[in-house]
Length: 519
Image 1 (tube, rainbow, N blue to C red):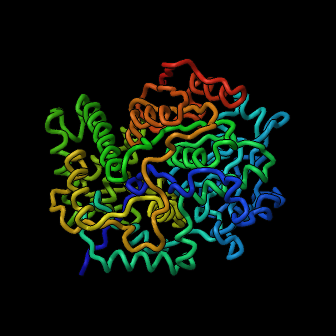
Image 2 (image 1 turned 90 degrees about the vertical axis):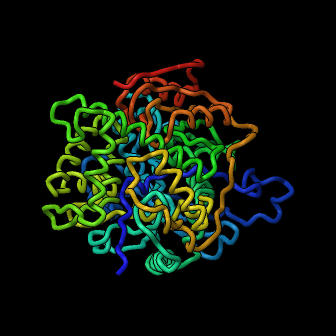
Image 3 (image 1 turned 180 degrees about the vertical axis):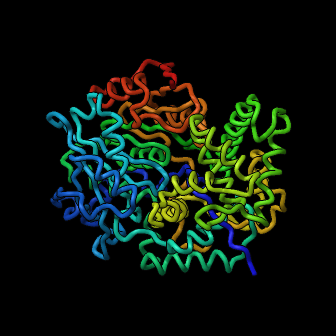
């Protein structure tokens, strides 16, 4: 009987640099305007904001909406297929946090993923930036991208019961396990059936999300887009800039991907970044007398492998009855590496494994996946994989095995000590074709000044990627010294707040070489 291999929460957060095909890279020209589909009914629609009651689909959304008093929600209608706008529509959930003063316009935000809820991010950003001129002068608006969270239809591949029992099962070269073509076909069929058809899944890629965002911009009454995107949101922002350069007012791209990397290169680079953070976490641990990894830094990796590799055959137990296998444990560790403040929780979780228990690591993974205490999972991980399937370069089994070997070499803390054979790309049987190409956001004309933020110790979007994106867009780079992933919308750093606020409100970019430091 084939073992089901869990797709851990944080490994699902792999971000993919992407680009538009040549046919999608520019705004409509006079020569093509006569044959372009008529989208006027979408651009002219009336977006009616109302109470957010009924918009929450997860426990986290319910508690977040309950914690604020001025959130307003609406549903935006967009075509499923922009080439055939009369052949069906999808509705996007939109949340607006009104400006505390007279609003000059809107700032649209994206939380990343892909698969993160823009509704939640609008509230998070509004609270985080509450002491800046941004929230005084601009409404903060977030939308759940097509297929995500409260938008309809939502991508759905597994039931909550399946997720609890076996984990979210998506093959990936970075994970422990072996799969067949039948496995990837069965998963794709399940996604199609539960979501409602191949056609919609094939249209959830980033270019269509950028088109959706342009409709939202217009319906909000903004002549040009003012945008803050983090992580995957930097891909979305760059793709929008490529498609609609004359519609950009301001772009803040925080935690950026290198737009020149191919998919496999990006994955290797990303996991090398996690290895760097793992090493720093291990260094900090070995300096304490009770470190579960010992006091010898040179032996810390080996000790970690001794603890987690047995989980392949004997998963750890938890008080809930659910178990923690190798992939789940690794995903939770990665989740804790996103910022140095959570390293103690990772260390505690690893120590707990030595007692055969996995509660701490399971909680870390559940938190990222937005699984509620009621057992309801958000669709973050499912949406993440499927959207990436429509953006990524798909790989053969041979290419995936080669990629697995490269990743395990660059990031040995992920290595389960097994053969690379049996790796498969979980996207190989998904419907649709990859809609993006590489490199992206190249040689854009007519784009105003942009602001890219890159943190020197970012584990998942390495600093150098932000440097390259800023250069590619001809924009300004803000370097932030520290160990975490993204910072702009949290409001946690006064220096970053000042830079972002001056740019959003006054379109003033920082001087070359500008640097902030995390507390």
